[in-house]
Amino acid sequence: MSDMNMQLVREFFELNLFHVLTHWRHVDFPRAAEPGYLLFVEHTNPEPGRDLDFLLRAEDVPSLYRAVVEVRAWHGDRFYPSVVENNPVLGHVAAEETRTLAQSVFGSPDFTSILIISELPTSPLPRAKSLDLLRQLGIGHVIEFPTILQDILGRLSAHGNYAPSQTLQTLRLLKRYNFIRRQQLEFAFPLEAPVVSARTVVQTEVLPEDSDGD
Image 1 (cartoon, rainbow, N blue to C red):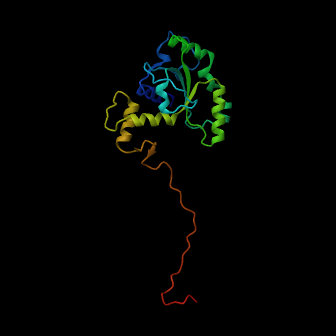
Image 2: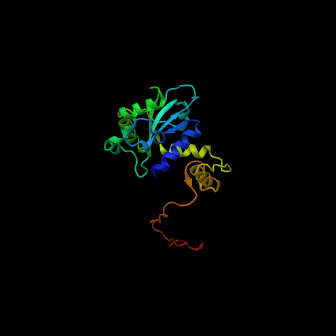
Image 3: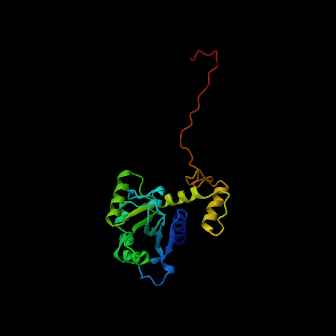
C-alpha cells in the first residue's frame, strides 16, 4: 500500500508541474530514517507568493516552491488527536535529520515540509486539535489524501492515454466507465450492504364512501 500511496502523491505533484525526486534513487545523499516515505518536490515557476494555510487545498499547491514531503496515509484511521499524540513518528518530516537531508538535495534552506495524511476528524473541535498538535511538531503544511485523489481525478480525461502510469490509467478507466462520478469519489456500485428498514408498517382500512364511520 505504501508504494501505491507514494506513486499517487508523486503523480499529484507531477500533474501540478513539480519536479519530483525520490530519496532512494540517489545513494549519495545522507541517510534518513525510513527514506522510502520521502519525496522532494520543486516548482520552477510557482504562482505569485501568498499566505498559505497550514492545511493545504489543491489550489494552494502551485504556490509552493520547494518542499520535502512525507507520506503517512494510514487509510484505516482518521488522524484524531489521540493518533497524533501516540505517533511521534509523524514529526519525522520536520526533524533535524530530514531538514539536513532536504537541504543537501535542494542546495538551499529555502523549502517547507509537508505531511500527507489520510483524513482529519470531521468534527470541528477534534479537527482543530489535531491540526494544532501537528503544527506543534514543526511541520510546515498538511494535505489530506482525498484532496490528492480528487485533484488527480479532476485533471484526468476519461478519453486520455496514460499508459506509462498504471495508477493514472486505472483511475482513467474507472472514470471512463462511470465508476467514479462528479469528481467526488462517489462509486456507481454499492460498497455496503443495504440497510433494512425497521419501521413498523401500519395497515389502514378504507371505509366505503356511504359509510358514516360508526
